[in-house]
Length: 86
Image (cartoon, rainbow, N blue to C red; front, top):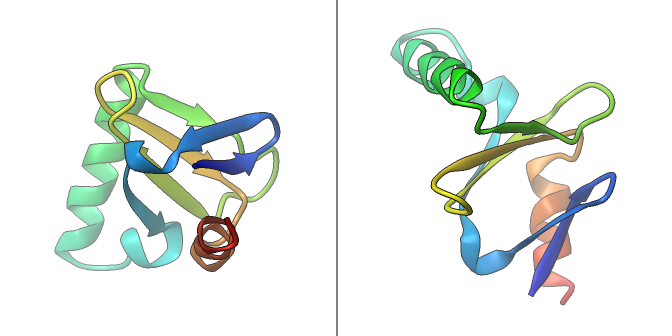
């Protein structure tokens, strides 16, 4: 099944490793350091695809082409509903 992430990007559901809310994933404390470091590393390696076009709300980690991170304007709830509607 394909899940639309925004703009013209879709991914296969079996390629999704996790869907994370940007507000809670980059919250204060140790999580902030680990998540921010992960996102910075992914950006340096060219593994981040920004499909938000606006204020990003979540990111989707996939195993497509290694590890690709899609930053999207959709909330985690909206992505979950899209996955369950099929």
